[in-house]
Image (tube, rainbow, N blue to C red; front, side, top):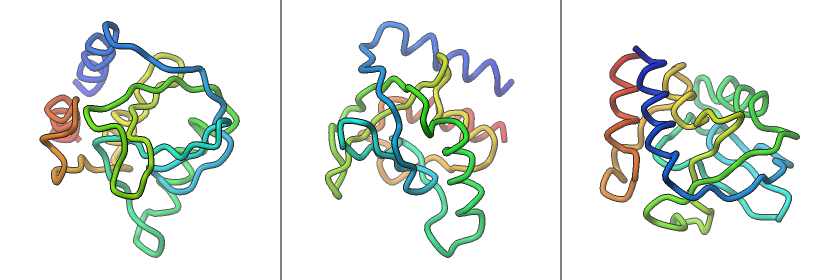
Length: 131
């Protein structure tokens, strides 16, 4: 069922404009990374543990495995930037949405606080409910 929901997300994004590819140069934590342009990207719609919290390192390691030194495509969310000035984006590697993957595998939770400004909130929530 998780795979079906992730495929649904892929179909939804097939009509949207993707930016990239961009090389990922640094992974800050489980939901933040830097790209070759020097911009910092916050994976939109999800939240992973912060430094010092349980599973922080695991989430960061998985995001690193998926994206570090890889070329990724970005999709802008409803809101361009978050409160810390980071670009809010959905990240794609080999056609798969990393945001949804992190939720499906339990490394991230859907960020309910921003449900009104998250383009794929409902779809991500469905993925989360299946974990």
